[in-house]
Length: 315
Length: 89
Image (cartoon, rainbow over the protein chains, first blue to last red):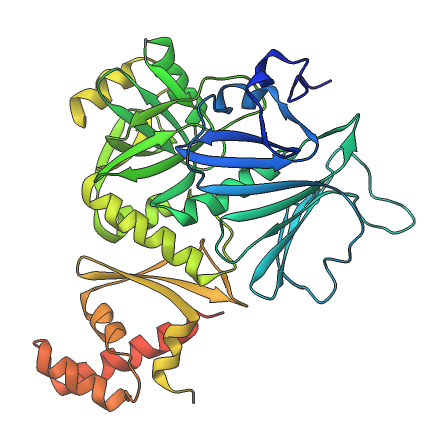
């Protein structure tokens, strides 16, 4: 059973829930500096990972989400499928274009394929307006509650939030040693968690070991964590260097720049690639970032000596 | 043969210093595992793939802007166009 935070008034967390706008409840999330405002006539439930991302202070929203109960309203009629997120075993979600808006069908990973229809049950439907800032999310109602940020809705929402700002989402781990923030990126299994764990065990703050958002703010770059399936603080650190990592028989580092740096880091960004505007956003972001933030290829041996090696040979 | 300048519509590109990074789009989906970097000469040709451009005009531009002879310029343009066309698949 997942640990839930509820917006039901019995929960101490949601005494802050603002019900001043008629009967419509309102709650704000602050994720990677984005203020995401959720409105609903229903109480809202969240995974425990969202606990420290629920704002206590109301701010001007960047992203608006209207949370509704699932109902059959024929949204997909006339919509054109443009993207499928799946691996060999699981269907995660599909994206459709309807006019200039985007429609998302999110599948329930826990349930089996329905033998009669041969389809995976849909757990949520979402509509994103062309401004990429206004969402409507339809969720199943359970005990008078909706869970709008049910996985993978939150990462999907963040995919599009980053497109509205100087920001990208990354497969990466990140640490802050009190002076410098460092990000480690690479394919699954190359040691992102291992190397960030070594820094954490030697006194650094672990920002996250799997997924980060990078933002450009006043000419500087910062890394943020995002809600995961476990409880963690809402964290931010400056980004002073990026390491594209791999396991190696000895510690070895090479600084890269120009197109090699841009293409090297872009390979590990998280994005839906079906729209050239989204790809252009990422390539432009990384081109500017690589002019400011040094990028290194790092082969490493997984022990604490890699910390000194990095400090001596880069930042 | 398609107009040369329409080749660009099948890619997302960005100038990075003297090089150009290009990402092919297949059925409008970017192939992030097939990102290419064009060197200075190829990047120059890419930048000049504008409306009305021809292979002959590209050769002239190469001759005017780079220290190459006519034979090399012709070969470079031909190789560039073949490679760019090959990247779409």
